[in-house]
Length: 148
Image (cartoon, rainbow, N blue to C red; front, side, top):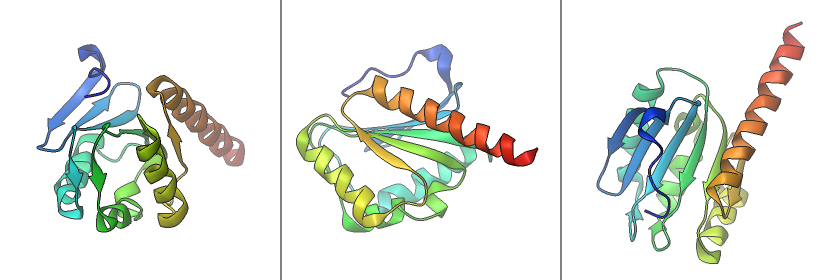
């Protein structure tokens, strides 16, 4: 893993899979850490998406997806991750890319697959976490303004 796991006192739920680890955090962030050299296919994500829905229990959230230094994701997996079902209850998603190759792949995913919620690629987890929190606040503030 590129980054250490979140602090134990921030983890509500954790699920380990052969190719990734999922964390549902106390700050409303759903974090996915992809393991080194993983080749992710659509079939890998079907149970992962189901488990995520069980963990978040219908709550709005932000997602941070951490790419490995070396790994890949199939075209079918990218298509699946861009569906409304895979983005249910997500308000924004950040993709943390440790190198130029994964950054290009992330930007390609955002531009070509056009997921239904805002996505942005970052080279640093702290920048990604700050962005999702700021974007989430904008969405909540906008909702509150429209409610009045």
